[in-house]
Image (tube, rainbow, N blue to C red; front, top):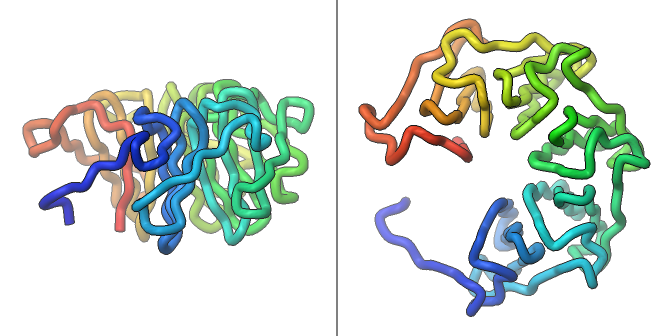
Amino acid sequence: GGASFINKTTLDGLGSDWVQAIYASDTTIYVGTDWGLSISTDSGVSFVNKMTADGLASDTVQAVYVSGSTIYVGTDTGLSISTDGGANFTNKTMANGLGSDNIFALFVSGSTVYAGTDMGLSISTDGGLNFINKTTGEGLGNRWVSSVYVSGSTVYAGTRGGLSISTDGGTSFTNITAGLNHTFIFSVFVSNSTIYAGNPGGLNISTDGGASFTSKTTADGLGHKLVRQLFVQ
């Protein structure tokens, strides 16, 4: 539970010690680094690294999401998708409707793929074949989308200009800044009806759908007020 830790590095097969994204499914762990996607099928004991030679759009992996047997990898030059456990990848770019090839966040719900980029939130309803991009014109607080979380038909997008919430699957957004420690939202996670938003000013928590937030900072025990990633279980 965090009382003690075991560390894994390039000596265990990681492509790099600079870890930017993690996704775990049972005993399989996917680790995105600045030198490929490292995959472990033995709970992190050892890793096999995948790179551009294996079909990745780039060796700089910034986001990972796994849905069933499909791996979605967000890189700085496109979205790489594998349906065979990472043996091969197909790549999607702006030519497929992505707002940008620079992908920071991913979320998958059924056949719908949400990709946060530096030019908007791109949404695909056909498993990543084609995307429609959403920007400030649809209500996003900023075109730069750092994080995304989906619960039912509600989409939460963390942007550089606030927390943007859509209740119609991403067709339109309402942007929230009031009550937040900072409007640059690095990470968002929703558990039941509680919204957690990490930003440079700390951790904000809302239990009323984003109407109001409480604030947690170093005064409450956080190691640093800059919160980049969240996970709630």
